[in-house]
Length: 122
Picture (cartoon, rainbow, N blue to C red):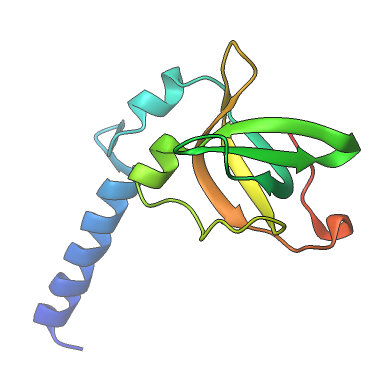
């Protein structure tokens, strides 16, 4: 492998690492993890999308134990961090619970339809 190729690959790794916040230079972490340190703890809930007629970006998720969770997906949709949302399918929603009990989604991913395969809610 030529030196030029090594430098090129190293540059790509460094750029990707900086974007992900995993580079340590001189004992300091670079790449934007400071905001994550101040962020509220995230919540992860898996359930079936029960209703998508709550308004633009709002959905009803039927979680384990017959719990109904209102999901505010506005930010996840705006940042293109959602799967295609179809009523009756299972999804895992990651976000934060606000004061009114809504789950403000930062990402939404498809999950297995079999609830025994779902990850634990947290």
